[in-house]
Amino acid sequence: MARAHINEVVQAHVERAIGTSGDQNAWASTRRNATAKALLDALFGLGRLQPLVEEEGVENIDIRGHDTVFVKYSDGRIVQRPPIWNSDKEMIAELQFIAAREGEGGRPYNATNPDLDMDLPAVGGVYSRLAALHPPITPWPKAVIRVHRLVDVTLQDLVTEHQTMTPQQAAFLGAAVRAGASIVVSGAPGDGKTTLVRALCSALDPLEHIATIEKERELYLDRMGDRHLIVTPMQHRKGQGERAADGTQPGEYTLVMCIEKALRLDAKRIIVGEVRGNEIDAMFQAMQAGVGSISTLHAYNTVDAIERMVTLTVSRGLTTEYAYRQISRNMKLLVQIQKITDENGRPRRIITQIGEVQPGEGDRPTVTDVFGLDPHTQLQVLLNRPSEALIKRLENHGLDRDMFLPGSEDRDR
Image 1: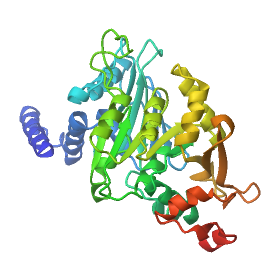
Image 2: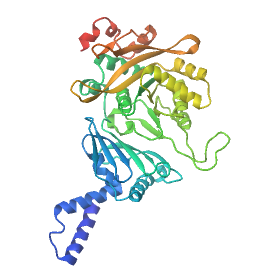
Image 3: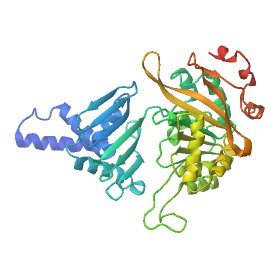
Image 4: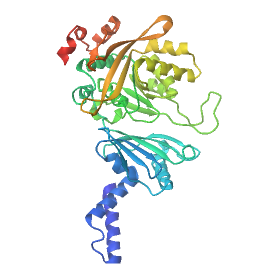
């Protein structure tokens, strides 16, 4: 309907312009189509950003002020592009329009509320996320858009099409997801953590009720058609005004409140998106609920991931001992993913570690790497057999214990 109406408006404008100027060539079909596309993008898409987001292979768009634009592609190239706006004022106005037009889900972007994070409208099947800062926090408006290219993805896709993991790793992780094991996926920014979580969720029954809890939505499990039929996508909402005695603000809907509501809504699986700060509280509560949780975290290996969770917990005013106890008792697997450069010079994302988390001395967690990289061949290999308790648990959900026999990896390859 929007396209049809825009075409009518453009046609009326063209007829008036030609009637005034008498120039039949001023509005050729190319110009008409470009004008209609610009109107559609401005009203329903991302305005002047939309062509860049739609461009094949674009992963990241990094904008510093109106006149400095760098685009990162999936093949590793970083290319500087022409300015998108004519001034910083224009850039700020367009970002404010994009941020505010979501109705009650809109977010402010100004000098008083300089920090903006949000998922962007999906236009043309392209999903993306925006992070922005407003002056005076930075000297100029700053924005980074992450484009999600792999949304509807399975574990098998990551084995065969992307070589992210081996068949043995996929079988192990798929059984762990179905068994309700709590899993944390760690890696650096852009390493593919969110994509891996989507693939892990593909191992679930389509009728299993999933609740996703995020600061800004980017998992999109509710948009995958028949793959996930019952999904409740929940999102944190900021409050405004003075904080109450418990630290909350009027109108705020916290991640912990989302957890409580998800359980009341009878969710059988809780996915607590990206853990960057106070999301750690929600992640631990989801794990304690025993319904099976999957989360992501910024860390460079499984040991660092443990310490990162401890640091986030301590920053919330809790103790190191509390953090270690929550991790050792409620978490089962740590999965490390990393973006590497292959032998042909192309970037590729691979799983470098899958570790089993178990209680150690004094409830301090220990991590035993089940899978890792061979230091000589850089191949993903089985390093240690999982605990018998974990094998038995996963056997009930499709795991073949023979996959851990000597030589099983070679057969899979």
